[in-house]
Length: 96
Length: 173
Image (cartoon, rainbow over all chains, first blue to last red; front, side, top):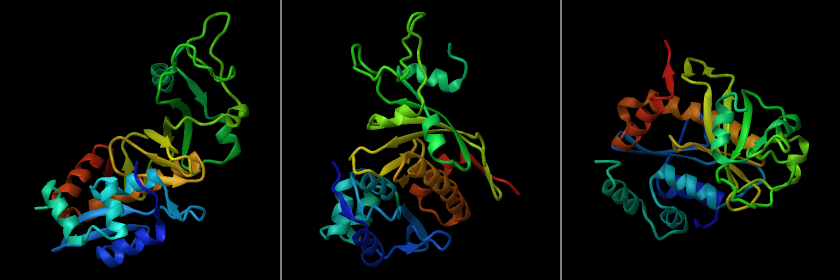
């Protein structure tokens, strides 16, 4: 089961730790661009009553980012760095 | 008697809940809900509320549809819904088939429903299944549009995602 995460912490990590850009057309989407290539996209649902991302939302976001849920939790809660994430994407063939 | 696709789909799962209660409770923009079907086939002897239509009916006890009473009972952890997207064209983006099979769940029981599908990574969330599906559809269009616009700048992984979405969407001139 994926761990629940703070939505604010997740958004902060996406922007500040992983240097993801907000989509200009819909600011709930975050995209990672490396060397001019877009390599990942994820969506943060922003309902007013859920400030915490439950297991299933964490799992969906992790799927969009092409990582296991616990890896995504590590991305938000510190252990996983941007380099770890990029290495993972390379390992699974998402980027060259 | 099974008369349409949703009935056929429902027939494979064993239990059917009509979505009338939900549609009555909340106006749904952009699509019409057809059926709710559970992902799991009930086992023989499962204690289902008597008003929940059980497809294995007979002449004495035919399958029954539900009304607003459906909402008094817990929603299964995950179920599949077939929806008809009425606004299948948004700008120059068109959904090739207006019928979508959507998975809806609240697996962690936190009161936040999540709608998704089996062909993309798009999801929507909301405090009701209807809200979640509405957000999912909105984001499905957005995701295709965004990837299609950026096709030349996509890494291999996202390019595969775009190819899968092109099975469902077309950008018209």
